[in-house]
Every structure is written in structure tokens, then in C-alpha cells.
Length: 428
Ligand code: GDP
Ligand code: MN
Image (cartoon, rainbow, N blue to C red):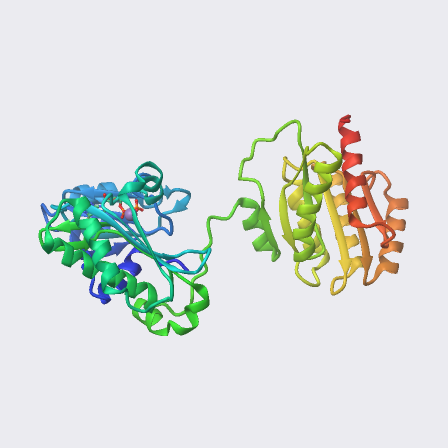
């Protein structure tokens, strides 16, 4: 769970690290006016759960109340790196006299060693520093998961920073204290990341101008005190901005993930395959298997477009909506489906699919070929329904090929489906 900047600063401050004075968190630009004193510069900072806000216009400095209001109205309601800005953190701007640096504590995913990273090049993207000037970074790994940063390591890290910043011994002590405290925060709150970038060296000592904390979700159960400190009742689930399809699926009550970016430009040489699988496991399997069969037999010209999972026991309407969502997607050329009816019924599945196709044909809406297999619960009644449906409305179901029973493995069904779609396009 990622903390917002103001929350992370609350944590750092509690552990003794200086942070800028907060003037408030605002949802409306006009409300800021009264909180900013005339002639006192402030920082306006978009509260969004993503870094790199500065470069994206999500962090601005204002000289006084009027400018604060006008800049704030530009940020509030805008998007910063795709994240809608609903709240602004307004703080007193602090002035660096001795430079800016980076302090981060994280865990090396390869060996689980806690890793402290420092750099005198603060305020810049640390990955960029690592690429362009690796000599400006010191990385110290600490095996043993110690609760306190060993004195010698703290001294080494602080000395590296102070020499890079051109500061004296007084600075070394202050930096050593901050590094040790960031390390302590990382340990105490079960963090995945605890980071200050930049730490500004002001006349009154180091101040954390920005703060980032990512909590390890596995440790949340023992962080009651932290939730209390931040006034949070329950854990937040971090979600990046969902696509339109994902929002639509959520409203209909099934899980869906787009594999292509929103507004993906269709490659005319590729076949795009939408998937309506039986469950989550099958959903993941189908993604791999469609790509795999495409690579082996169709020259790699096949790309799956989605993950989907109805959960157990969907209704006829939900099944229809699962297909509708893919038919409405202009990118999709073919839908491959599989109903392995355990908890879910084949009967409901086929009624959903047939109903969807009939409705769309009647309304003149877009339809693409559907190929798949169904097996399991309620298969006999599903087969009867399907045969009757084909007799009654053959035209509506022309491009639907559903294998009934498991005389074929899915790889074969997928291969035949892709062949069918390739033939329809006149591709070899
Ligand atoms: P990020 O881009 O999302 O990491 O947002 P930051 O909070 O780091 O803000 C971007 C940049 O604004 C920082 O790297 C600093 O250069 C600058 N900045 C942020 N807060 C302050 C402040 O209080 N005083 C000064 N002088 N600069 C600040
Ligand atoms: Mn930053």
C-alpha cells in the first residue's frame, strides 16, 4: 500500500525527521487563499500515488496567496501522469542552502537484503542518476535485517553524501541522523520503500521536501498504530487508473484486464483475439496458449487482448455482457471462449452467448467470429439449446463454432479458431 506524500511525511516527522510546515490539504483552489500569508512562498503538490509529479506539472511553487490560487486551479482537476488530481497539499516552501540529496531504503528482491541508497544528486529521478552518473550513488546492502542501521554504515553513507554536497562535519552528523531514521522507519513500519527525494539542506538543517513510503501489504496486520496515526480505518487498495473496459466490467461484476493500452493502434498484420474463458486460471492459460499457438502455426501474428474472469455462477446477462464488451472493442477480430462448467453452468453460458449474438445482429451492431468449447455442468441441456438455436436463427449464429464436449483439447480448438479467422481475412 502506497502512502500519499502528506501521510509519508507524517510518519517521517513522527520519527524525528524535519518536514516543511503544512498549510493544509485542499480540494478547491479558492479555499487556499486564506491559508497563505502575503509574501510567503508555498509549494503546491498534487496528492497522487505516483512519482515524477514535478516534471509533469504536479508540483508548483507560488510566491503568495493570489498566485497559489491561480496555480492551484490549474492543477486541481487536471491529470498528473494519468492520475486525476483531487487534492492538493500546500506547504511552506523551504530553501536549500547546502544542496539537495537522495536517501532511500528498500529491499533487494534477489536476496531480501535491506538496501540503503544515497546520492548527493537529489530531486532527480534516482534511476536516471544510476544510469548517467553511477559514481554519484552509494548503495549499501545489509544482510541480517537488523532493526537499527549499524553506526559504521550510517557514518560511511553520511560521509559520502557530505563530500558530494561539499559540506563539513556538522553536515555529516545531521545526515547520519536522517539516514538512520529513514532506516528505522523502513523497519518499524514494514516498508517496501522508505525514501526522501529531495532532502533539502536548509539553514536550519536537513528537511524532507518530498517523501515516499510503500508499505508491505503482508505487514499491514501489525500496523494498527500506523493506521491510527494516519486516521485510516482500513487498508487502501492502490489501483492505477482503470481503462474504460475495466470500469465497464467492474460495474457488471466481473474481473477484466486490458492487455493493450487504451487507444492501441491496430496493426493491420496482426489478428487480435478477445478471450471469454471459464475462470481465472483458464483466463491466464488462454492468454499464453493463444500467443503460443499463434507463434507456432501463424508466424507470431496473433495477439490476445484481455484477461477476463466471471467468477463462479454468472447470470445469463453477465455472460452476454462479457461478450458484448469484446464485440464493442474495434480492435478485436475473433473471440475465443471456453466454458469448463464446474460451478458455472454451460446452459447459462450458451444462452448468454446466443442471446448476445441475436441482439446484436438485430440491432445491426458489430459482431466477430466466436470459436470455443464447452464441457461440464448442464451440458445436455446446453447442447439441446444450442442445436435448437442454430435451427431457429442460423444466420445470427453463422460465425459461432462451439465444440460441445471435450473430444478436443483447447490448443486444437484455438488452432482451428485462428485458422478460421485467418481464412476469413484471406491471410495465409
Ligand atoms: P516528485 O516530482 O513527484 O518527486 O515531487 P517532489 O515533491 O520531489 O517535487 C518536485 C521538485 O520540486 C523537487 O525535486 C524539488 O526540486 C522541488 N521542491 C519540492 N518541494 C520543495 C520545497 O519545499 N522547496 C524547494 N525549494 N523545492 C521544492
Ligand atoms: Mn521527489
